[in-house]
Amino acid sequence: MAVDTTETLKTIAEKSGMYIGTCANLQAIENDAAYVANITRHFNLVTPENALKFRVLCPERGEYNFEAVDKLVAFTAAHNMQFRGHVLVWNDQLPHWLLNGNFSRNELASILVNHIETVVGRYAGKIPVWDVVNESVDELGHFKKTFWYNTLGPAYIEMAFEAAHRADPAARLFYNDYGVEGTYEHENGVYRLLQSLTYHHIPVHGVGYQMHLSLEHTDRKIIGSLNTQRLADMGLECNITELDVRMRTGEGRFPQQYEAQAALYADIARNYILEKGCNTLILWGFTDRYSWIPFFYPGEGAATIMTEQYTPKPAFFSLLEELKKKI
Ligand code: G3I
View 1: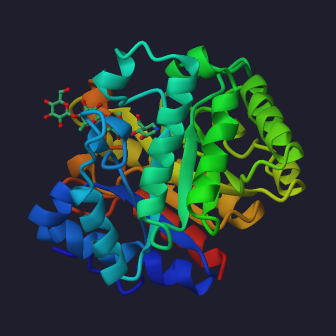
View 2 (view 1 turned 30 degrees about the horizontal axis):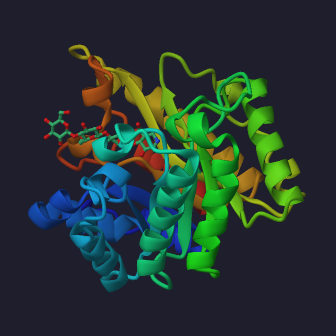
């Protein structure tokens, strides 16, 4: 059943021209009416949790399966939601044919560019924003030694943004990363990367901060510490792209922890939406029913703003209250 509040996250966000989003999976949209009722009620942006990952789209070389993305794009268009493309270049969810192909530098560069041109080109005019490159910098500020880096070096990043721009010159292109708020070295590494890209006139428009937070390990003092101003000074936008706040889920634990979770959600909204002027806040799921957390962090969960039964938690209301302050 849809949440019974007269004010929704979406109606409040839209009053200040904001995007409030969530990742989503087609399976839930096709099979769960309550999921559809809530996602359309509270969000004006959707990004696919997995449907655009390389391995999901192209499990066999040259054979693309666009059906799920086509349906998700149609769903968002029918509900006046923005569709954010996630993600073109990452080290995870790569197809086996690619990982095991022993490709030369030239072959790999051409695979990367063809993939991006194929995918972005297909949705040109329909997907206005893309997470182009994900998670290239480590917590010490160095380039991660990833599949793409190991053969192409850091040039893969420029190649990716240029290919995306060629395929859809109007699309807004983002570098996306996690844990950037964790160390100054990581934040500075991302800054140096963006500085170099903009210096070389590579088409990049913003940085996405994922913000997968943990109640146990996140220091509230560092939440708002990211220096988005120096990115803005280079003409770059800042988005929060994958917010969730996980907690340990032993018996009887979650209600007591919900207030602390609500405070962290509010911290993010206050710091990045109200104070730093980010206009896009995306949750990595809005209901515990489909959250990725229990699968990846056994013993943890309850990371989203609604329970598995779609009951809004204190985090839902704290987020709503912060968004209202922007109006
Ligand atoms: O659905 C299958 C299931 O049938 C199978 O039994 C099981 C065994 O491996 O796998 C299930 O698929 C998993 C899928 O999530 C569905 O939950 C995949 O293995 C697993 O790799 C996939 O994980 C996704 C992960 O990215 C890796 O692509 C998560 O759903 C997704 O939430 C997560 O999202 C990432 C962002 O894209 C980038 N930032 C970090 C974020 C969290 O890791």
